[in-house]
Length: 149
Picture 1: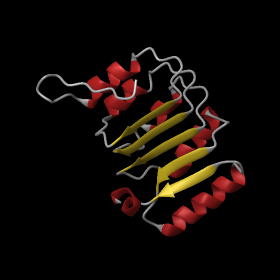
Picture 2: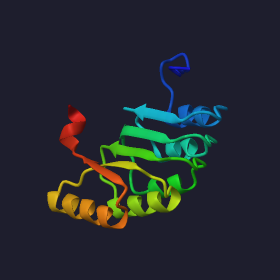
Picture 3: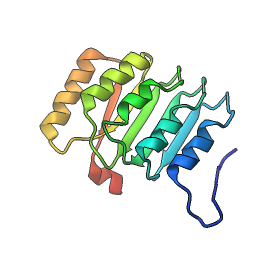
Picture 4: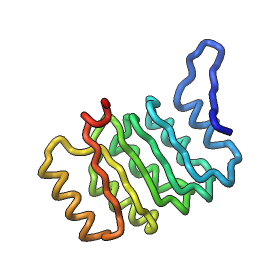
């Protein structure tokens, strides 16, 4: 399946409904999940992380409005083989909390993309700390300007 498209007839469907439907899909061999440009609510993310995708290796949630409140939900995800995670959106996350969560949950993590802090010094410090603690991790901090291109 290349494209999953759903409408309620009016062209209006909530992300919560879409994510609930997606999470219940039986795709045991799903290895890559890319969702971009979706207006995700906390309830939508809560549904998404219930998906049972044991082979999932790459999760890309870009142009989302993910907040620090959503980060703990990812700890509940049943995705044991995630190696690449992209949480790039319109909001800034507490980078250290995300890093700790990811590296604890998915020790085989190879690439982590996050929205960059507006303070460049914080980004440099974060990159240095990540390199010291997890030398094999490729941490990529994406600026808001890069999102617009």
